[in-house]
Amino acid sequence: MAGTFAALFVRGRLVVSGDAEATARNILANETLFRIGFTGELLHLACDVAVAVILYALLRPVNRYVSLLAAFFRLAADLILAIASLSHFATLRLLGGSDYLKTFTPEQRHTLALLAMKLHGDGYAICLWFFAFACLSAGYLIFKSGYLPKAIGALLALAGVCYAINSLAHFLAPSFAAMLDPAIFLPIFVAELSLALWLVVKGVDAAGWEARSRP
Image (cartoon, rainbow, N blue to C red):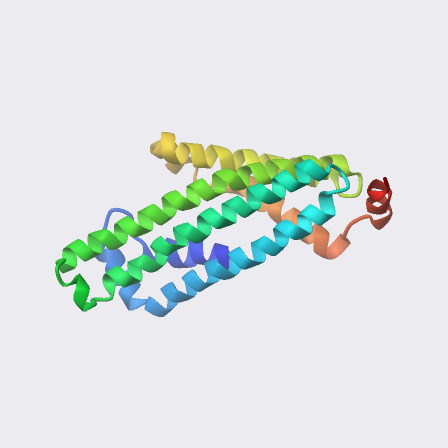
């Protein structure tokens, strides 16, 4: 939720694509919100590392190596997004008006700030490419598990396909990517929400998990 808040309600609200001056004005007028969005993304990353470990332990009885692969893909996505998040915070540095930035005109700093946000978006797309394979791997394991619903496994695999298509389109066909947004994220939302709700409300079939865990 913290990552969604940062993406939709902070960057989505404050960043005006193609208008550096409006973006700078929005960020400076809502600096606290912008900082909260950055902090929320860091919180999301810390929690997601824990989720990677939990899912590895949960799905390891199905196939240890595929479960490990899913965990590594997820951790790689987290690392890439952590690095990309520097661009989010760099925007504040560029707009802060420090003395060492006075060699740039305000217009140049506004342009560089928008460029930083664009680079963050590129980093996010790379992150989601790796996350796509984490979803595909986890979806396969859930489908084969016998102690979690096959439907959720299929939905999660579909989410992985959607993530992969979205990331490829971002780099190969930006105009096509704009047509896909936001419809392509609907299956993703349904899949991730279904898995979260099932684990929180219903939980795992303990007998099935123990049976798969036996040598």
